[in-house]
Length: 169
Image (cartoon, rainbow, N blue to C red; front, side, top):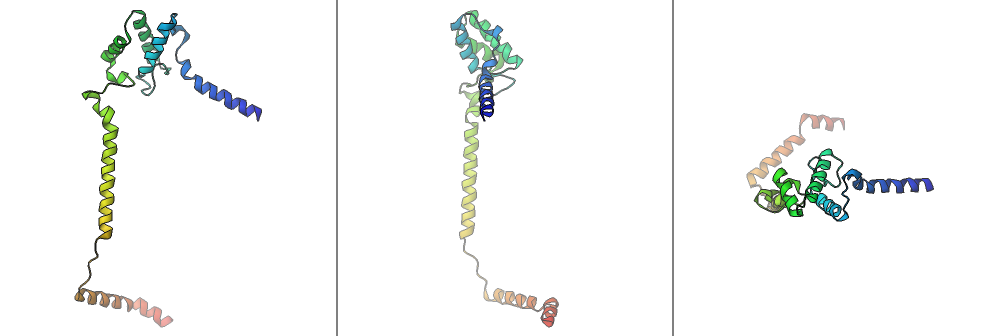
């Protein structure tokens, strides 16, 4: 049991340490304040290969290139917003993990809500139409139709197959 707990603990440590291993030692800036800025900025920038990870978490070579580019911009004295603007100018709003709300990103922000609302409206319409159909009064047969149904049922009960079954019984 001790070995399995140790293995589980080590597995958890490796999984949790994975994102921290993305930044290579040769990328780290000597100035702690600049490195802190670089890590914060890298956490806001999307890896264009992985698409759902920040460049800080990604091991992709393009993410490494972007991390190095961010660090170059920091050492060159650019502001955080200046670096973001540079990356957006080069790669578009998609490079930001939280792109700004504007006309070009409207569907990105509100698309899921619109799809959910359409689905909800569709469900309401579907269930209302089903409930109306279930409570609609049934049409009663007039006397001629009722007599015809009775004749058909009577004829069906006297078919040769039924007569043969009756004879055997």
